[in-house]
Length: 101
Image (cartoon, rainbow, N blue to C red):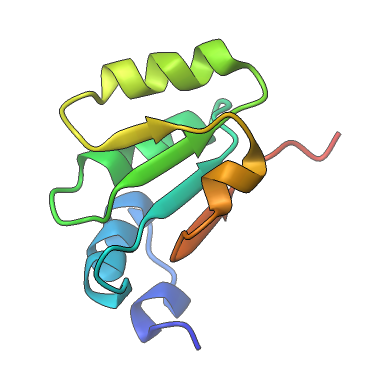
């Protein structure tokens, strides 16, 4: 069952989702973000910079993009996963932002 704050549409979804997840995620939980393209990179960035959000694990098909994201948001707890499975393992929330082609 999703918390009501996740079901609600919100224009600033990155920050709103992070706020919601900080209260809905179990202690020790994490967020996984799969796909750091034109949209995903910035969405994951909002999740990484929200102060009370759980730790973030990112994965992208191109490892250099994941490494760049982790370096850019190094002040936050961002981990780069080697595989999608590794990113999603143990995550309370998994965001997937992939192209349809």
